[in-house]
Image (cartoon, rainbow, N blue to C red; front, side, top):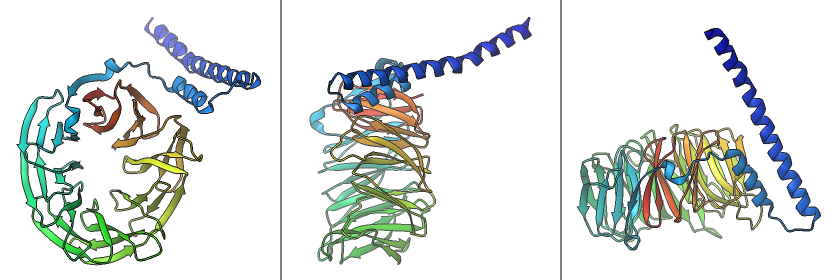
Amino acid sequence: MNTTDERATVREGSKKPKVILFILLFIAVLLTAFTAYLRNSDINIDENYIKKLFYDTLHKKGVDEEDIKLWEIEYEAKERPDFAVYKDLLVKCTIYGITAMDKKGNEQWSITVKMNEPMLKTKGQNLLVADIGGRQAFVMDTKGLKWEETFEGDIINADINQKGFITVVHELEKYKGIVKVFSPEGQEIFRRSIIDTFVFSSEVLPSGETVIIHSIDVSGMSAASYIEFTDLLGNPFAALSPCENHVYPFVWALEDDSFAIVNDTSIIYFDKNRSEVWKKEYKRVYSTGVIDDRVFIAAVSSVEGANACKIVLINKAGNIVKDYQLGEEVYNISTYHDTAAINTGREVHFVNGRGDLIVKYSSISDVEEVHFFSKNEAAVVTKNSVDIVRIR
């Protein structure tokens, strides 16, 4: 009897893919016929809307907002806070101080400090708070303040890598900037004053052996990016001028010290020896990220003046792993290991490393950014609240 039941289950299960395929084909034919009808009737249609309708039909998960929202933490929008997720903590930073909360909004610790424009960054080990335009930087762990530093010039930018190394770029009289590198414990490793180019960012690559100093060179006909490489003692050993007359403000560093640079129209990937591997050009690049340290995900537009984005996934060899029309403008992309969050303003599309939709979260308020606790939970920051949502 058990054998018969098992065989019946197998036979019944084998019919499901055929039924699903039939339904999808039927929907595709129906939408195609509908589009043709509208065209023949001289009715104006938005092709991006039709594509989006088809995409949503294929990928809809049937999950309502309240089904995946675990908690909602309200905040005062007039405070203009910056948020980050560090370990299991949600950290809020305002011009008046830093507060760490659990996922339900219960305060765990707080520090009162006056800042101009606080910026939060973390890549796992510690949490960095830098006062952009001010002169203080703070490093926290799960218990609170670990160490702090005051600088002799206004901070331009700061970064923290996966191992906890800190880089701070600040103003310095008679120079166009200075880069200081600190160990995870707060000891200054080296400083490098820059006199020829305007330095605006720096970071220690994941290996912990190389420092990138990213500057703007204005000596030519127009501004261009200039990237210098030093060892962890500050000794320069290589430099790169990636593209004449173009500035690339964003750098994505991978675990093997290969990296990509991005501006508003192109993405260029270099191997760890700083040799260009590939370049992709578009009418516009809206946002980018890295999934699982092996695939670049980007929201791009290939049509002049179009706001509707296409999502592309590109591997390190330069091959397009997947691309699809999203039909909406993308404001930013956040990633965590093999998961990405694509923010379209009122919706967040959570996708896996293959670009397949996991779940879609809709908000009644504008979404500003997304931070991950894990591949299963994320904090969706809106105009007046932080929604803690379940992804899987």
